[in-house]
Image (cartoon, rainbow, N blue to C red):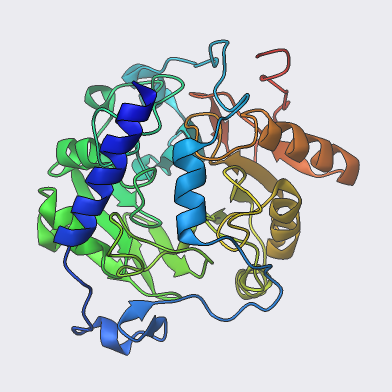
Length: 359
């Protein structure tokens, strides 16, 4: 059965590649400094080691065996209610971990979402692809009214069709990198509710200032639309506090530039997971995540992009263990909240290794 599913997946990917349309240079993207030869690109980074070919990566995913990448024991999840969310202090900024890189924020009384994924699989197929380790701490139906939704890029583990289709008319405003607007419109989101950003562009909404900042990654949802849309990290400024969200990224000099431009952050949500020597340019190791955090001049390191989906070859606990050990050795303030845990920015908390002892 496993071999059969692999064959189906390979055939399906080939079909998608043959049917998908190519990107174009239509305005306003042609004016983006990030666009090269009709596709978005990262600035040169000579410090990044070379990665494996796309074919090598795909065949490894499809045919190699994995060990310890999926938890045997249940991931702890703190269930949330709308009453609990409503009771959170409206004069503060709160971050709730929903799983992987999905977060619900309550910023000065208004609710926001970052890269929300409530679907069962992060895949173009309902029958195959990485499946959730745990249910979200609340359902889509339990979400409060959402003022704004922020997307870092269009990969399936960050842009989820069933989630967006449900939220389409339930979110007041969407903030996305260049090119992602068309994705959302295809999923039923009214075009007038979506605002696209190039790097360093900013806007304000519902008391929050948002800035799209650089990251080092790639985009695409089929084999033939790679880099037809932009990727980004984000800065949110609310109530005198600054929150940084890395999105998906490799380590690059842009972290220092972002830290210098904004003067540091109260909280940095940093990618920590799905790294591998096969793709060193587009995801950070825990050691690189710590260095990026230091470059950003942030106060608290909040670990994201782990504990929900099997997307690489390291064990599911490896990102958490390595980051916790590094933070302890360097005396850094670390946040590894449980799924569903509420963190209030600027408030003291006791961090614990909730994954310790789990298989």
